[in-house]
Image 1 (cartoon, rainbow, N blue to C red):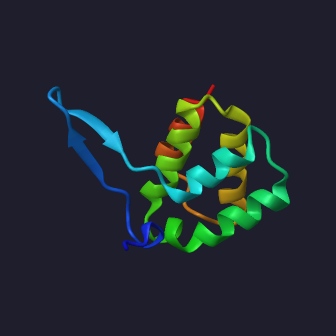
Image 2: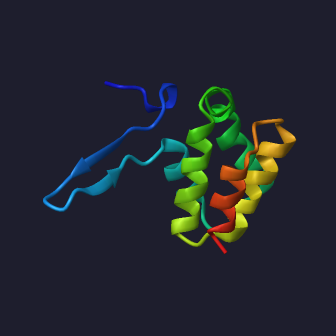
Image 3: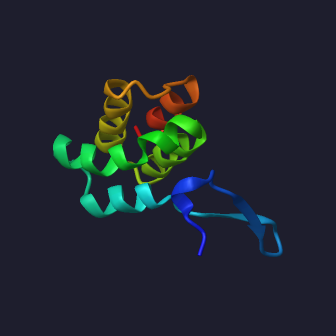
Length: 103
């Protein structure tokens, strides 16, 4: 079994029209189960597990923020950005644009 927490997410093409199927990051699945607004302590417990991975593969956190944006979970996306900032994780224009897309 592949441990999705240890590698960057892959995007696979499928279907006659070449539509993309995205793998869902386990951290995104966990966040979606928690609901639209999460207690900061609960959020920290979930995301602190993934912080070393996000540090190594910043595109994963961009993917998570993009997933929150697709669900229009603005408040949660902002909470994730705040968490990233307090943990000194990389925040780039890509992360900010993904979060803005949730608005």
